Amino acid sequence: MSTNTPHQEPFASLSPAVMRASTVVFDSFEDFVQRKNRQPDGFSYGVTGTPTARLLEQKIAELENGRHCVITPSGAAALMTAVMGFVRGGDHLLVSAACYGSLKTFADKWLARMGVEVELYQPDIGAEIESLIKANTRMICMEAPGTVTMEMQDIPAIAAVARKRGVLTMLDNTWASPLGFKSLKHGVDLSIQAATKFFGGHSDVLMGCISMNDHGHYDILRETQSILGQQVSPEDCFLVLRGLETLKLRVEAQSASTIQIAHHLAQHPLVERLMYPPLESDPGHAIWKRDYKTNGCLFSMVLKPAPERAFHGFFDSLQHFVIGASWGGVHSLAAYYPAPLQADRPFPATDQPVVRLSIGLEDTAMLIADLDQALDAYGRAMAQG
Image (cartoon, rainbow, N blue to C red):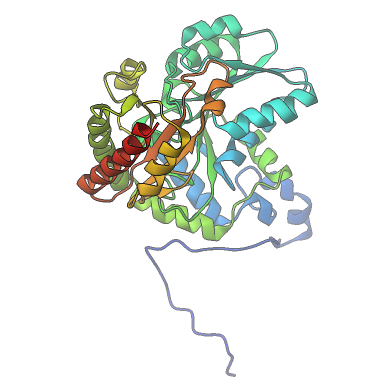
């Protein structure tokens, strides 16, 4: 009897399978009744993931030198999921003043109104953070270098103090990636990546991930991911799996180009300050040199004071840098952060506007020439008063 079903030959591919599912089916009534026992690794419903998601989580955990990983729909979602898994009303939460803006907003406008005591701390702190720890301190949220202003904090020292005091630590380690800094090896409990950036690498996917070694933490975060509905589409998992294949090559190339461009800009007469720990002139250089293995692809700069139209001249003159707020992809980006955002922040690094640059894979000399001509435009506008 003929059928329409094609003959099934053995099949293997270098490309991972994209497995989509909302409904997971079960072989027996007993399997269905006991479905919750499949977690945190198994499959019970689409919101807890498919084999495509598990493969990506396994790859990221290995990269992080961790045992477990939970993926989320964005880097911001990873930060919020990590906090929501462990922090409750009555807890004290320490948050770096230079961490990602949405985490600070979430802490201030949501957690604080749910009874969490939120405290922002100086983003270049080290072991002295112990003086801020209280009996009800539950978690320390770190980021190094800090978003926009690139402050370095002593992560191993903070992690050691936190562990001694029974406090959880979370680090947004997106700037360095696991290739540049091994968060878990340095004592951090939860290592966060915005996989949107280096892991995806091509500015076409949003994703975040949380890596860890403690199985109890993994169990809690898988449940939190499921309850909050923070699952990722298998197509997006595929894109990040593909991005991981070239991660090392891209990070190495972008790191080499970035340090060259930063050295050039540091000598430019219109650049007042470069915020970039791999430079010896940066206040965080000693910590970076001790702990970090890559130069990243992101840095910020403060230009000589000038009217607002000078910044219009700079950005509108760029021909190879695209104006955009993200980073980490193969295309170079430029972003602007106005003075009020800096001056109004606790422990401000500057009260001046900040220009942030992400270096991609374009020719380094071409990017330097583009920045030079944009700075010329800035200088002309500045001279007009």
